Amino acid sequence: MKETKTLWQNVAENAVYVIVFFAIIAAMFVIAFALEKLSRKKNPDSKSEKFFTTRKMAVVGILSAMATVLMIFDFPLPFIPSFYKLDFSELPVLIGSFAFGPATGVVMEFIKIILKLLIKGTSTAFIGELANFVVGCSFIIPAATIYMFKKTKQRAIISCATGVVILAGFAAVFNVLYLLPAFTKFMSMDAILKSGAEKNSLVNENSLASFVTFAIVPLNLIKGISISVVTMLIYKPLSRFMKSNNNY
Image 1 (cartoon, rainbow, N blue to C red):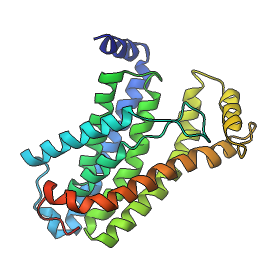
Image 2: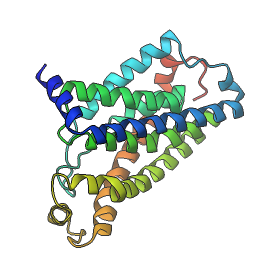
Image 3: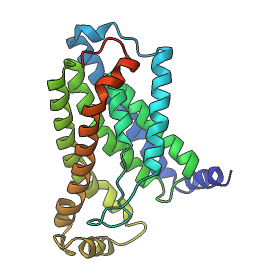
Image 4: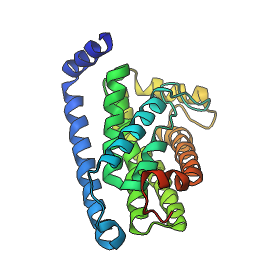
């Protein structure tokens, strides 16, 4: 109850961030649905799939709950400041997205964030949660979209590789344009860069570019590659339980 009260206090105190948060979520939904519609047109095997089924909603619920738990149990890495943490919450989301499409992936990302806020609240005025959602979607949407055009093992590998590259690139740009400036609400940019230099000898405390290149990009590469490898290992047997018509 205390966490819920804290959450609503944060909503009231950070109304602008909340509005931006939901505007970006809406944009991600539009992009994902548009790409999924396009991929279904190109892939005859996907045209007959319904967006809402009882089985699908049950699987999405389970995967979203798993993603929430993985998001809560995040952890810092030694080469990056502790306010950046690694989590593997995109693993169940990517699995669900491969099975059902990018739009379902965005739905799971949204459910994951809402559940996390209800359970744990926010300590970053929704900035961290927005970053997790947007950066996660930058990985999930392209990977799932490419895979939907042709569901084969080779295409799955291409999908994951493309998703990792876009994830790392998008995370770098997003940090420079939004996330790092937003974090200056809590600490100065000089302090952020200095903390990066203290953790990572490759980071220059006077260079934002070095912070992004040697801290942000490696963090997201580790995340994307790890999730991709595990997905490739476990998706095929799991897909038999989620859907009966997957080729891979």
